[in-house]
Amino acid sequence: FRYTILTIFVLFGISEVQSGVDSSRVSNGVEDVSRTATQFNSTSAANLSVGVNSDWHVACRFLSVSVPKDSTIDSAWVTIRGVASSDNTVNIRIYAEDTAGASVPDSIISLADWDARVYTTAYADYNAVGTYLDNTDYRTPDIKTVIQEIVNRADWATGQAVQIFFKSNVSGAGAYRNIRSFDSQNATAPLLVVWYSSGGGTDSATVRLHSP
Image (cartoon, rainbow, N blue to C red):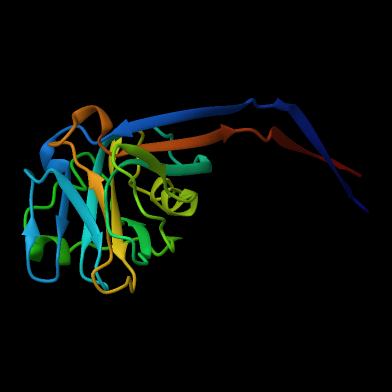
């Protein structure tokens, strides 16, 4: 006997692609901190400074980032309020902390704590940063690959926190950019914006018919 296997694909329909945007602002003074090579600057500083060779860095923690797991990140950036700064060349490399969970990443409390944090593989370069003018908003380059790495983690769930690091990357000697902190001006603290899409594709089943 000879049998023929006939395979039929049954399409149930195309699921809807959902697009959205989430914005999360630093919401208290312990969520934006800065450091030098030897000093941790915690929660009460009016300005957050990044630059000076590769020595001054900033971290901002954004609570309750409402992006569904495994969404496609279409674009993402941080809006920061500038403070009058030096004129020399500043280069910044932007990472996120490579962790997720109901209570992590938590706030950074010391140099040793900062040094123990693990950064994402993905990063975005913010090079030759122009001089910041006082009380003017600036938007970083697109950091969608950084956020994508976080929302693709097995332990990511919508509503968790994301911590972003602004690391000086071979800036000029004496060159820095100042960012307005939460403690200085709550309403203009750093703001993370994420545009995303999720869903889409075709739902299907396979039916196999066996005949002699």
